[in-house]
Image 1 (spheres, rainbow, N blue to C red):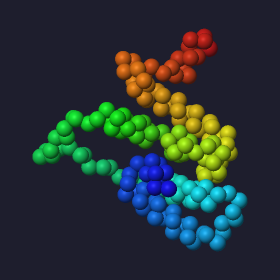
Image 2 (cartoon, rainbow, N blue to C red):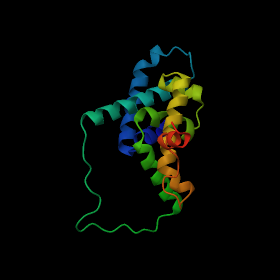
Image 3 (cartoon, rainbow, N blue to C red):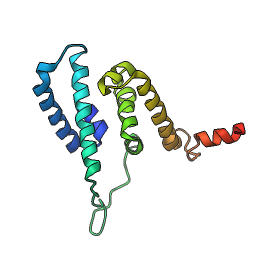
Length: 168
């Protein structure tokens, strides 16, 4: 549950708060559980809903973070390991996705849930999960193309460039 909340919200404090909200909601709704699915699926759905609620609230009251560097701030040494840098780049790329695409990608591609489990957790059709994952993966491929081929910048063709090649 923690991993889903953390990967969905990208902020440990927000994820902890969302998880706490989710478990309170689960406790209050325990009597309404109909056992039509696994308890873990039901709990994951509650966690995802709590995360999405926090995202919506945050969008309603946007905040601007303070800069992490500035006058009299210590310089960050650039000796990070390559995999740590890659994780940060991927997290940034995930942050660029709309929430409706990020949640299915996190659940399917990062957490390893099946499309049907993800559909149940998010309360959407399996086809919707597949299409949102496909659109999100296409956007990620464009943003992360340099990881696969460092010599090319965003070497993934866009739908516009495909249409131009096909003469449409």
